Length: 340
Image 1 (cartoon, rainbow, N blue to C red):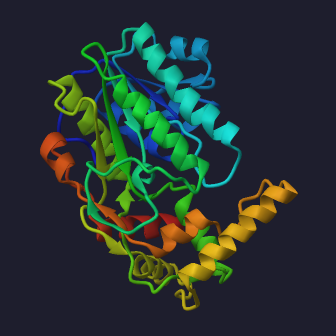
Image 2 (image 1 turned 90 degrees about the horizontal axis):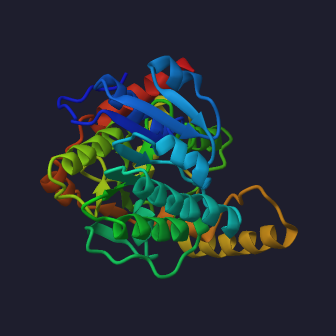
């Protein structure tokens, strides 16, 4: 269902951390299709990856010995592994996203890996206000409503600061990744829609970036190509998306309509959702609940405010342009969802 690359990479061997996940697997598929020997480091064996021809190494990215074993003889590391989500302890996010990334960088240095492409997120610049067409000159966020965003800021800064002639580094910031095989965003949306639990937050006019999975994987390989052919992207971060924002609630409703789910009709104002999120966060912390609250302050901000970004720097430096349109992506995704 994917789209093959139209270029070659002068890379013999690659390592993808988190290569058994949604984004990682998409990158692995493209690397193997180019004839590049590819290993995957993850917490489990991944039969689907092995069936493609990849080799699985079981372990944790924060374990230096495991990482050294995985990085030996590798030309490039795609560091995709991360603890995502918006709920959990700081210790968990710090260990996986911060210490794990530090371990990856240190292991690359020790093992002579010459290139590192890091999977980041636009959340690193989300400053709790609308962002309309912002570019990479936006400052990192100073206040955080979730540990995920804070941990990714620290990790991205570490990766980019590590850039040097011996280790060229680059960060890719895809926004709202979706498509066939998505185990996170779409299943949660559809489950909420079927149970009629989803309410529009705010006035429904907010525009957001979305990123189809094939485009995200494509961007990672373009970054690798750039680093291997001169490195003009070295030390930089790049926003990645479909190239034009969508109205969040129209996009959700179009998906629901295609899946024979009632469109979202109920709504809640942003101030009420934000206040409710704060109350739920406090209650869940007091009670020690592990389950994520249905509403948090971060989620209220994300659902009500515009956040879309310019991809001009990715176009100019990486030659990035979406290879799958939003409409085609929706067609492929709905076809996949209905086949499940």
